[in-house]
Length: 202
Length: 202
DNA sequence: ACGTTACGGTAACACTTGTTACGCTGTGCT
DNA sequence: AGCACAGCGTAACAAGTGTTACCGTAACGT
Image: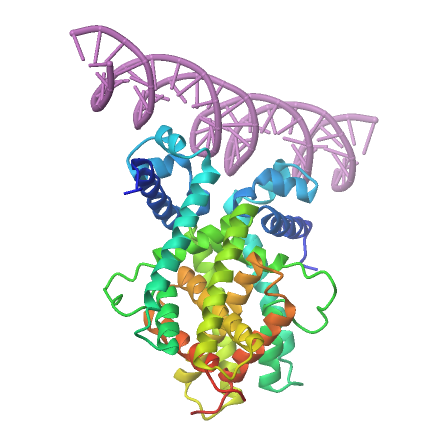
């Protein structure tokens, strides 16, 4: 209802931004390429967004909000914390159940890496990325705490950090070598990391 | 002896490339910026290299060869495979012993990420990155095999994949959030990953 | 001492980038 | 119907890009 046509255009442009970023990398991400991908001209793009950075930031924002909404839907009370954590992490490396279709396009990982590379020279984007990762860590730590109540908060956070490293690394590596880091490998690595993250206190 | 002045210039230019890449990101990596950093003009840069891609590839190559030479020096027979593995991985996340000086500049990680982002749109660079990671995996798998001879080759490779994910993830994350993923966190995460990688067969 | 030669800088080039100003067009209101 | 207005494309702009051709200069051999 509150969805105006302007929001619709912005979303289409954000989708085009993702596609271009995944295909051509950060150096190929130009306003003209985005416009061509969206089937319009640079005029429309800069009428919908103030400048290029606003376009990038909005696309990044949308990526984040989609991820969190999907993650929230997972934790609906029908599953235990361990299952929720597993499904959440598997989806984070694009290896969730029901994603076994032949097309192992690592587009999501490429988009992710592209935004991260753009953050290297854009403090606003970097701050946004940090916030997103903070939310990721908080979610993981909370799930670990629910699964292992005897653990202290500090220990949960530490284990969440380890999980984030595995997930981020798998995404990064699958970008460069999708054949070696295929769904089976990513799933296995995530399962292994969860096993140590949910191991009882030594 | 075989070190000509041309090689010297190329090395200086490669160092300048790293600096610029870490400071300004992949979109700020221009020939003029590299020339300014090296204290010369674009003329010299393009007299030493055929074009920009050659400069990038050489800088990438040098990064790889330095890493491997340092890793080879670690495995000189005075240490056991577990120690070598640990030192190797700690150095891979810029948290090796003797690197505790105050300046926790994550320049190396930024350079790494920059090259990876550049690989997204440069197949030659991507292939080089894949080769480097292949060597990394082989080294890890060999060390694991020497530490745990009862493990099969397949199992060693699987565990090496998990280690690579943790290392790559820590580097990537420290790029975006160096305060949260500081040396202590990286060291702790690496130690945890090694512990599960060197755990006896379940 | 003089010519040669290789090295490195200067400046121009064609092109692409983000951004802005302008003009057409179509839709809805009175 | 006539009109105002917003939406979108067109085209231009200045700045910056990789790349090339050209020129000075300083060292070196004879």
